[in-house]
Amino acid sequence: MESQDSAVKTSEQQSKASAAEAEAATPMKPKNSHLCCLCNQRRAALKRPKTLQQICTDCFYDVFEDGIHRVIVNNQLFKPGERIAIGASGGKGEVKNKSSLSLSHNSVFVPADSTVLAYVLSELDKWHNYGLDLFLLSVDEGITGYRDDSLETVKRNELLYGVPLKIVSYKDLYG
Image (cartoon, rainbow, N blue to C red):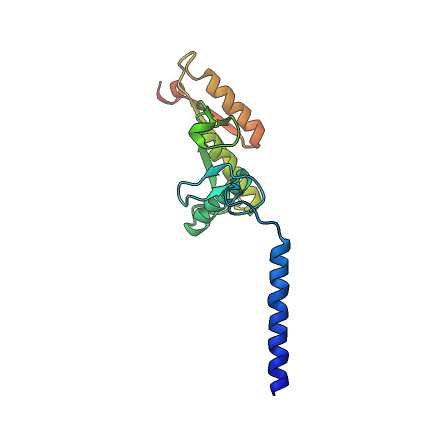
């Protein structure tokens, strides 16, 4: 019995020693390395307001898309075969500077909300087989010079995301 106890203690001591050696062999990262707290591999590019986690761009996309997927599934937002219109403004995206977004790049283009929605819904539909019939819907108000650039953006998004586009005319709808 005593020899079993000593054998167990010796085994435990060897495990602890091996763990200590492995820890000593692993290079310590500086506390202020600014690595992504999720993957611990890439440089953190932003801080999530919700959790205050500093994460890299790749992990941000994963967390963002997974969060939207969970909302869709948990709230049963769609049924297979449903036809879903995505309001597509083609609105002006903006270039934000590094200091306003806490990004590692000097500047980044932030697309209009409808462009992000179109991209994310089309990608999630492909990845998770929601079975949706998605299309972009845009209204042409008929004001020359007001929507020309935005409508061109919406047309590009149709090609880029492979989601059909329907442009309706305000004049045709309301006279």
